[in-house]
Each structure stands twice: as C-alpha cells, then as structure tokens.
Amino acid sequence: MALKEPDFTIGVEEEYLLVDKDSLDLAPAPQELMDACTARLQDQVAPEYLNCQIEIGSRVCKTVGEAREDLKRLRSAVAEEAARFNLAPIAASCHPFSDWRDQHHTDKERYNVLRDDLGGVVRRMLICGQHVHVGLDSPDLRIDVMNQLRYFLPHMLALSCSSPFWQGQDTGLACYRLTVFDNLPRTGIPPQMDSWSTYERSVQAMTNVGVIEDASKIWWDLRPSSRFPTIESRICDVSPLLETTLTIASLTQALCRMLWRLATHNQRWRLYDRFLIEENRWRAQRYGISEGLIDWGRREIVPFADLLNEIVELVEEDAAALQSLREIENALAILQTGTSADRQRAVYADAVQADYSHDQALRAVVKHLTEEFHADL
Image (cartoon, rainbow, N blue to C red):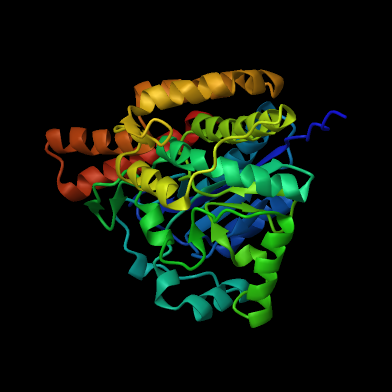
C-alpha cells in the first residue's frame, strides 16, 4: 500500500528589532504599539524576551504563495503601527551597534522565569531568528525526517546570514547570532533519535527531574514542535528581505518532501554524525556562502554554489508539486546578490569610503536594513 502523502503545510515565525527612526538606536515597544498590533493581528503577533523585539507568526499555509501574502500582511501591519511611534522594524538577527546591557526584558511571567532560570546568559539574547514549521502528521515520520534533514541545516543557515556586526564591531562572522544563542542549554544540531517514543522518553526524563517543564524549552536547531504536528527548523537568521524568508521556507518544505519521497522508494538520506554536521554549521556561521561547505560523502570542501545547485536539482520535483519553483530558484539569485551579511558589510564599506565615521557607517547599515524590510511590502 502506498504511503499517504503528508500535507507539508508551512508556517513561518519571524522576530524583529525595533529602532528609532531618527537615531536608529534600538527602542522599546510601547504597550500602545503592542495593543495596536494585537488589535489588527490577534494571536499572530507577540512580544519577545527583550522589549525592543516583536514576533509574528504566519497562519498555517498550504503553499509558499499563501505564506507570502500572510507574511506581507504581517510585516506591513507591524511597520505601519511602528511608524505611528516614530519606530521602524528591522529583520536582522543582530543590531549592528546597540549594546545588550542597555536593553530590558519584557515584564511577563514567562520571561521573568527565563531570567531567573538562565541568569546572565539570557541577558545577552539581543538576537532574532526565523523558524519554519512543516506539517508532518505522523510522529515517527517527524523523527525520521528530522534525523535526515539535520544534514541540510548548515546550507540553509548560510543563505540566511544577517548578523555580521555585534556591539559596534564587525565580528568576522556572517552569523554571529548563533554564538550568542549557543550559550543557552539544549541548543545546536539535534541528536539522532531512534523513534518518537525515544524522543518522548528523553523529554519525560528531563521534565521528571524538573529542569524543564515541557519540550518548548528544548532549543535545538531543528525539533519536533511542542505545540503543533510539525517539525520546526530554528537554525536560520531572520532575513531583511521577504523573498529570502520565503526561499528558506520553501527549501525547508521541499527538502522534507524529498526525504518523504525517498522513503516511498525504500531509500533515505545517509545519516551523518552530529560532530560532522556541526563542522559545516560552523563554516556556515563563519563564512555564509562565500566559502564552501564539506560534502561528507565526497570528503572534500565543495564551493557553496555547487552544493546549492545540487540541492535545487534534488528538490525540483518536490518544488513543482509544492508550487514553489520560483522561491526555490531564488536561492540561486542569492549567490549573485549575496546574503544580508554581505550587503551590510558592503554598505558599511561604501560609507567609510565616503568619509563617514565608524559610528555613522554603522547607522547607514541600520538605515539600509529598514529600507530592505519595506522593499517587498
């Protein structure tokens, strides 16, 4: 009997930073702003840990086309309401120059508990990410796909990099965000799991001891969602351009379908040790798309463009079935335009060339990020 095809629905969550339009410094979200956003978007908008952050979540979407319209509506609403308070959202994973020591956490029970549990580590969480959910009804299928999809996480991270600056300095990394996030417990590439029951037993062991109250406190780069029948990719930086967000979402969705399709032919992607995958994770953090990743089948470093072309070809059939060929092919365009990290560095370099001071050049980068946020709306 043929395996029933999952729905492969997608949902996207994005976290934004709010900046003052004049100074381009981070600014807290007034309660009136949150109230106005909630009135328009209901439960699709929420505060985040720091009060200069705001989070949105799309509806459950059947196609990436549906996700485009929903995310455009959400981004537009946040931008319009923020403008009423002389604020603007930016979709970058780190603010180029603001200091985490100057920020304050949102005074809600959930965030007060995090503050008490995680101490000084959580104070530095001045970072934003993008999460992509893909609907898989079968719990065991979620675990099976998670085990295989781990291999591709560094490739998606490389495309998304938007955090080269931290505390006013160029870090030398394309994605500095993960170096901050990895200070939390229960992060990184997920371990290989034998089955859903194995995963449940592990979660139950943690909750029984009392170190976590539920699976939502497991912050792996990829995890079974604690609330929905999905797997949730969490490795990527948030993207200033909506089209990049959609490309990463469609790649995640198409890769899940490709792995399911292999299973229908009694095939699977080779499972690689977490140690090997994490080496590619580091390379993606450090270089983005500018240097190669390791092809562990070939045992050699391969230019990122070659790897990405292979992935696009690999999921072409799935992208056609999921109506996402346009978004998948946009991944190849990123090779030409560069990642957000590349573009931010170019803006900074151009500003310095034009005799801007270091501080002025960093503010030019933030101005650029506000413009990119509004570009697709």
